[in-house]
Amino acid sequence: MFVDSHAHIDGPEYDADRDEVIQRALDAGIDTILTIGTGDPHSGALERAVALAERYQNIYAAIGTHPHDAKLFDDQAEGRIRGLIKQSSRVIAWGEIGLDYHYDNSPRDLQREMFRQQLRAARDLRVPVIIHTREAEEDTIEILNSEWTDSKLRGIMHCFSGSWKMAEMALELGFLISFSGSLTFKKAGDLRAVASRVPLDSLLIETDCPYLSPEPFRGRRNEPARVVEVARCLAVIHARSPADIGAITTVNFSRLFGPRIEEAGQN
Ligand SMILES: [Zn+2]
Ligand SMILES: [Zn+2]
Image (tube, rainbow, N blue to C red):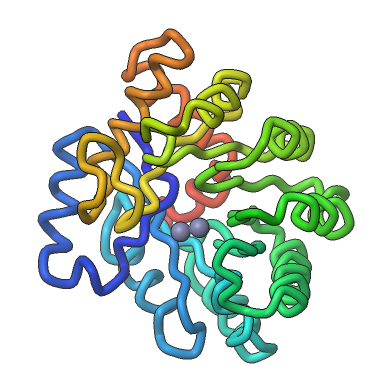
């Protein structure tokens, strides 16, 4: 039993064989997938993710505007995301949102502004958030502290690649810390050291597919079935079995999204 807490299987990379990819995930014991609808919010990308979650029992959606696309986010995009979250109980989170100073695909001041705006909207709707942060630790911490801390809502630090200081801050906020295939890379010793300090009840696993295929599949298109490799790696780090890690992270996921998932199940 495993949850892939962050996948982009609504994307065009899977148009040719999406059903097979989903079936392989089920066969590997991945009974829940959270697909993340990002991209240009005016292009139909959000709607595509929601439609996928409506179609498959084991798929939920998160939607939001990625920091890469901050320059495309506006009030109309916010209205669209809000509308979809209200309309479909299959949408369980707002994200991924945050800051990416590694690629700088959108100007940093705009990234910060749109991050704040989306946090406020998610807070207003009372939904958890999924945070993408890369080489922007200080600003991420500052913005979460000012916009999110007293919301009493939680979220996920996805594809965690930060320092222990960043992890500690996320844990203080009640966030779950999700590790991807990058944890399995040979040079990721520092990251594995951080992962060893994260308490079991705050861990999640993800693929972030189609990106970041874990070892031994590195460089190839990733898919949800391979989240098992991340569980294997965390199992070694925490001296548990992969099945334990699967079960523990599944419980963590349910605790975070429980009320919204129950609501979705009734519809
Ligand atoms: Zn991301
Ligand atoms: Zn992502």
